[in-house]
Amino acid sequence: MKLTFLGAAGEVTGSSFLVETDDVRFLVDCGMFQGGREADTKNRARFAHAPAALDFVLLTHAHIDHSGLLPRLVAQGFGGPVYATAATCDLLEVMLLDSAHIQEREAEWAEKARTRSTGKPPLYTVAEVTRTLHQCKAVEYGTAVQPHPLVRCVFRDAGHILGAAIIEIWISEGRHTRKVVFSGDIGQPSRPLMQDPAIITEADVLVVESTYGNRLHKTLDDTLMELEHAITDTLTRKKGNVIIPAFAVGRTQEILYLLVEMYRQGRLPEMDIYVDSPMATKATEITAKHWALLDKDAAALLQWLKSRHGHPRIHFVQDVLESTNLQRIKHGAVIISASGMCNAGRIKHHLRHNLGRKECSILIVGFQAAGTLGRRIVDGARNVRIFGIPIAVRADIYTIGGLSAHADQAALLDWLAHFKRAPHRTFVVHGEQATAEIFAAAIHDRLRWTGVDLPAQHSAVIL
Ligand SMILES: [Zn+2]
Image (cartoon, rainbow, N blue to C red; front, top):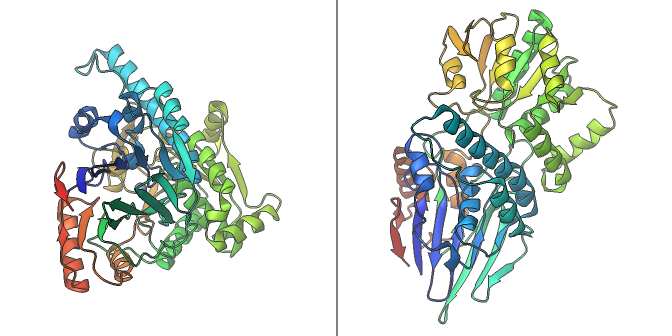
């Protein structure tokens, strides 16, 4: 068996792994590279394999850094099935269509602006996304699927985002069958909404993520106290609005859950919550549709909310006019909007109208990459420009650091500690190089595992 690391090797994005034997050839994930100037070049590079020669693809979850190049794979000749959980298939439709729209829009702008990138076609189109979605095959957690006579696999709940999976794969070669486990992205245990990651006890070969393999998260209790203080102080004492930039899929639903739960506990005042992002609204609908996958507290809270006849008041804002009307609200509103890093979308309008008012607060609840408006706000900029208009920052800025869809170092090591014996080979992926190194050393020190490697991009191992 040959395993090739096509992405997420020494970095976080671009997850894609090629598994080959004499009889079968498949990918686990086909993610987009994100961030930095090299990303576009990497996304546009030729695939290191012939897409038409792949038998199938296994997809761990819908995040674009795991799924974002699937339409390109299809456009270049891949006609086989993509196996993913039903919730992932639903989220994929929302996320890939959004991704294609962004691609098409950027290509148009580049064309109009006649920039250096003029002439670059979109990475893929809406039509290619539609073809991709037709190739998706929904699977259930815990049920074995056989995508090939010599390959059997089981998807297990990864507790990361809705539908996310750890994939166990049994591959037969000659008289031998070996088990390969891909962790995908693993969630932090005891987080709101999501189940804890499923326990795996055996593997011959393990490919494990390491996004936060070098640090520990704040506790959920501390995070809730920060949220409670920020919202209560803003709505009750300062009498302003709370603006929360949040990723449409995952983070928005998590924040909604926490707000409703804290309201139920009497920790938050009466308020109007607005979800102002069509994509977040769709993702919330998909989450509610798959409520059976959520943890039992979330299911109970959903029941409670239904019995409350509209308190707290949650508004899903659809059209642009409704969104514009929110700008007239001066106090009592909690507005959750995308994009999560404030560099695009409706959130920019809300920041424009609230960032300059000292009675308002901005709650930063997610990662802010270098170079984004969100990062400048977090870093304490006194003045920013939004749509070219200078704005003096007077609102309070809260950075709520404890919410993460990824397990921290302790949780990752706990998950690994369930293995009855060390896998023959372990590959640490999906982490910045320095982080992955620290995590690999921790695996060695704490679990005494040997055979732990940090693969480089495009490297291949024969197993
Ligand atoms: Zn992810």
